[in-house]
Length: 261
Ligand SMILES: NC(=O)c1ccc[n+]([C@@H]2O[C@H](COP(=O)([O-])OP(=O)(O)OC[C@H]3O[C@@H](n4cnc5c(N)ncnc54)[C@H](OP(=O)(O)O)[C@@H]3O)[C@@H](O)[C@H]2O)c1
Image (cartoon, rainbow, N blue to C red):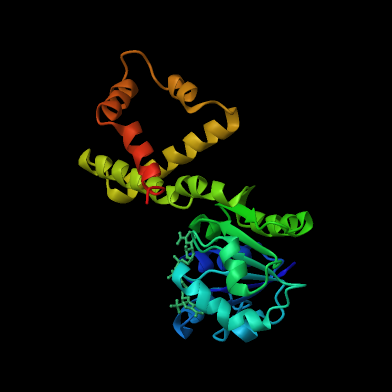
């Protein structure tokens, strides 16, 4: 499964193409609506085949990745479905909330090898957190091959479709929330006299350090926080200010907001 065709080269499709291109070992084809988007990919990765016509693009692919906006999925599938070899080709869709039953309906093939995939833009730097939910009846061998392909883009968790939403709030959307936190730290740093670029670097390194400690020790964050919290010290003052401002509650509400209709 090394021939991948990505339909849609925007924020998400483009990040996946770039991540796979950096890792190597795949034959990549990518499509977009405009030549301008494809030109940008070609400039960075001349080895990636760029095509404006979706039907001819999917011809030799083992894996077809649908990465257009959710409201365009039906029309793109209608365009390509006659050219899909359902015995051989596997279809991945990253379109949020378009589930495999619907995709199989659009494809007109109830047994199609379809998998619902939710990566994040960290894929471009091979640091995605990707959820992989195979449709009912998709073989374990197919799921394992797709998992291996997605592992080139970062970490992968296989789950049921209904479990993707919560995970996506922490990862797909979560990446934006983490960036907002970095931005807030920058603003604080600037108020204390740091230059924005310095504050950004320091905040990001603090973030990397926190991740390294949690990964390296396996500790619960509360226990790790205790290690940097001297009684009567500076850290606890800041932590308590966060609590007074309702930080934990704000984060929890932020994550749940995306699940509310
Ligand atoms: N952005 C994220 O963080 C994220 C995370 C997880 C999942 N997703 C999912 O990823 C999908 C794409 O989102 P996005 O943010 O990447 O959108 P986007 O940046 O607008 O990208 C959409 C891409 O689709 C291309 N396109 C439009 N119509 C097409 C057609 N008929 N044939 C081929 N390509 C076509 C566009 O081409 P042009 O560039 O030429 O206009 C563009 O490159 C969505 O379904 C979304 O739910 C996004």
